[in-house]
Length: 323
Image: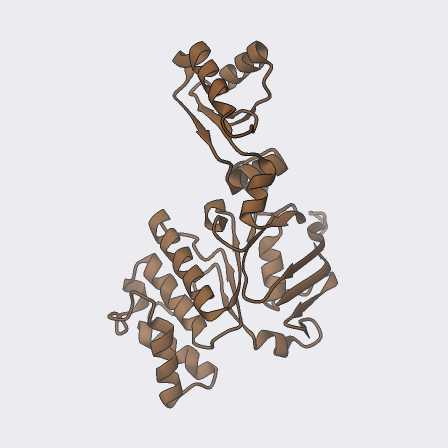
């Protein structure tokens, strides 16, 4: 459905700021009917890629095909296949739910029975069926996101693009949104490309791509990415993590990675982590707040690839922006 070849984009500089490479020689293919998540921290290039795919930004170099249509040469044909959910709300909060949906249908030339059938289909999965006459600004963030998704589904897209759609939602609403989106994608055999910096949202999709600083670091199934990292790891939390890490390294010679108050020890074969856990408890019980053996997740894959958590990189990016 999406074929990207050697895509690069540079934001030009000014007299005060240098030019910035947002995407560097990226090639990526996304099959029809896939749920694909593009993940990484702020500043990784994923939002720039999203804007290019939507036709809002022209790349500096490279090519993109949407179901065989050249996005740069024949944008109308490519765009006719897609619907878009932006990071910022794109519904009118002063209109009712029904008014927002009908207005979107009007823009696409839908009317009469066809529009009514599409409306019924678009909201069948939602919790807004009994709130069609309420203004959007009276809804919770999760319900307002449902309105946006229902609006996009009116056109029965072959490709749905979503840019950080769970931003601002609480964890429960975030999980519900992603689970519902996955179910709809499978029912309708849509291709879904969603950007996210929340790695837990990518654990049950078809493929995940991880970006950092405009570079594609890895792309594979979530299972393959986790398997490539290892089978299990020992994770220690301590209020004195920095000092405890130095002691562990000096006493045991084990390699560690520390992130905030969390110390991670080497990935091992299943069952090999227990002796390490027992050893640490025997020596450092008084300095340990919690200790566990866990299977690696996509956040752990990202830490392995970059040496930092997504939150640490995001904080650095925010600090740089504020200076």
